[in-house]
Image 1 (cartoon, rainbow, N blue to C red):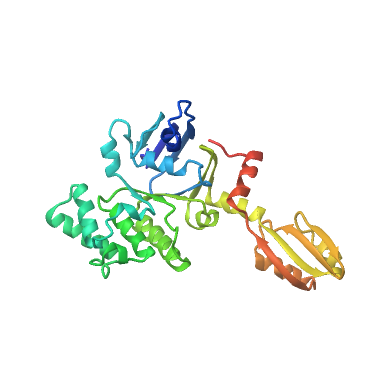
Image 2 (tube, rainbow, N blue to C red; image 1 turned 60 degrees about the vertical axis):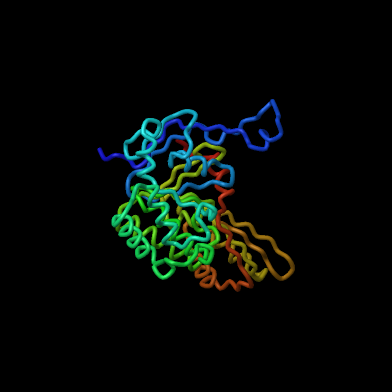
Length: 327
């Protein structure tokens, strides 16, 4: 049986908010960041970790990266117990964050990588070769000798990945990696992760995000974290089906077309009439926008306007409460 990239069992973590410590309050209240999380991620998978702010995503990533230890439960990375061998775990995991403060702003890209490579135990020709490989792989050779402070947001993200790959880890942990990127840069970034790092190099990726549709497009599987617990664990097909089923449309048409709209038997159809116009709302089901508009045009319905509303991350939680896919 192939060893899983990540295996967690009953992981729990509490902490005391720092503002309570500063206030000298003797009655400290702890926050339950994680509450009995069990999760297995196969090798070579892009697993999306979704949750609103405060759901426990960053805490879980820090535990997997061996930056903090769980209060309860156990964690294995490539079959290695994190509590027993934290340094071995750190060599197998690369962490990519959007925190620019972790770089030295007055140093160049090459000098930053040189410093962090030394921390990974790389020296001499081996270090120079590895840095050159990563600058080429991440397409930042032209910026190699620029100061970090002069880089664009996209270039900084690429440098962060280069740093995470210095030790050639088997797994990458990406914490909100597209934050601050424009749509073109974000698309290029996701394509690089999917095609190069996972497709060609076979690395495992845990993609932490609060963007539901980003996870839908990129991830093989999505784990939804809510209040420190796993609310759902869905593969891509299940996630797409759930999102599509809950997508809604609102359109404005002629009032005299209300009967034609009713004859189409659209899911959860509701029609209200205001003067010479009618407003219809309905669920898309499995149909795409073009398919629905095609049906409306074929029925001879004249549309003045329509709006498509996709499922949001907040919309997911009531659905899982009704029909959970819980660990």
